[in-house]
Length: 286
Ligand code: CO8
Image (tube, rainbow, N blue to C red):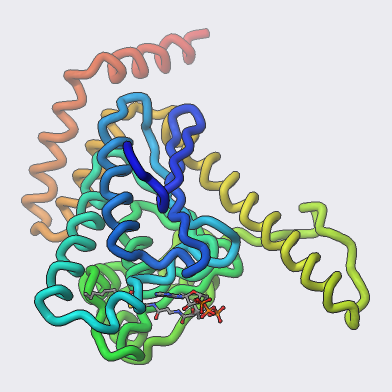
């Protein structure tokens, strides 16, 4: 891949970590970020050694602060349509990729950032994360899937409340709503840096930075641990399960159940299914 600047790709065994790397703008997605995200997803999607993808933001402050407002301020409706279409097609690609995708929400996930989080299969947030759809505060409705996916996750009434007010909600509230799966917090067991004098602003800032780094590491460790737990299962069974949940969401129950029968039966074609079942039976005999 050439000239990749805004997406850092790191792999840890069977897990690929994609980091949006534009911290100077709180990882807001301009056209180049969107294009690089698309290329990187294609690359990771084609890599058979990768079983799980984690998407996160560089730094400790923001997952992604949404679409790039400095770009949007002067565009016309035709350009806006292109911008929204290209972003939606990348987000759709992430939602539909057969590999499971975890969102490590390490700070602000606003507007397009919340919409990016919502196409991840599982969202884990750090306790300092803040989520929201603030688009109406700058004169537009959500445009990268927010009106549609938020209501499917939290129900239409809460989705409307969040969209109409444009308010940011803390990770814990997002958890209560079902918008994130889990919230990672630090505890005294996490080797917190010692307290410093309240009037020593310099030391206070340094300590806050250290705490933010610890929290971010803990978030990533939790996501990687979950990624490993998923990766050790049958990849075929996991990817078919993902497809069944995604496709079943907007289908009637009968269609979803019929699809489930086909997806389930197809897994009997794979060697790993036979081996895993036999291993289980042999283990229970020991
Ligand atoms: N776009 C561009 N730059 C941004 C964005 C953004 N979304 N968010 C932050 N930045 C920049 C700031 O301008 C600032 O830059 P500089 O240092 O050069 O002044 C830098 O990041 C740091 O930001 P702040 O100084 O504002 O940091 P604070 O800690 O004070 O505040 C906030 C953090 C609360 C996150 C604040 O930055 C904020 O409110 N950002 C905007 C969030 C937002 O409204 N996001 C939604 C954008 S709209 C959207 O995503 C729509 C998607 C669909 C569109 C479809 C249309 C085609």
